[in-house]
Image (cartoon, rainbow, N blue to C red):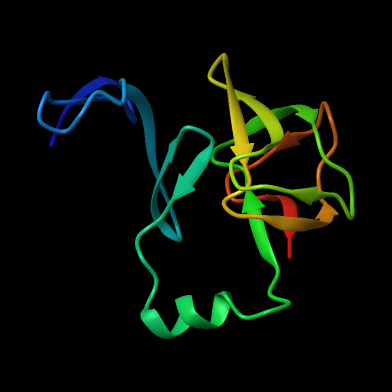
Amino acid sequence: MAAVTRIGPGVYLVEPDEEGGDHGHQIVYVAGSRGGTWAFSNGRVFRPAEPVRQAVRSRAAGTVQSLTAPMPATVIKVLVTNGQAVKAGDTLVIVEAMKMELPVRAPADASVKAVRCREGEIVQADQTLVELE
């Protein structure tokens, strides 16, 4: 279990309780768009679970996964290039939003198929930054 405290519009502090182990606190950003609600924490975007049939299909070999901007932001640093192998948790792009730097991380081991952003570019929520395969 965890304690969740609203600290601003769409910004929450999540603190684990003593029974849940001490993994430290996290800041979570929550927003809504036409496609639904999403959350951003620790460099990852979380969306409501997709139906099982789509989830199984998305893991098929050769499937391209798009990593998108979690919110309107400015690309501060692009840390990968086309064809580069990345490991789960590697930071691929750093964006700045609301005066905070937010890392966009690889969700799994993969290869960079395409980099769809450049440093200094202003990107919108859900805009593709990097494609992995």
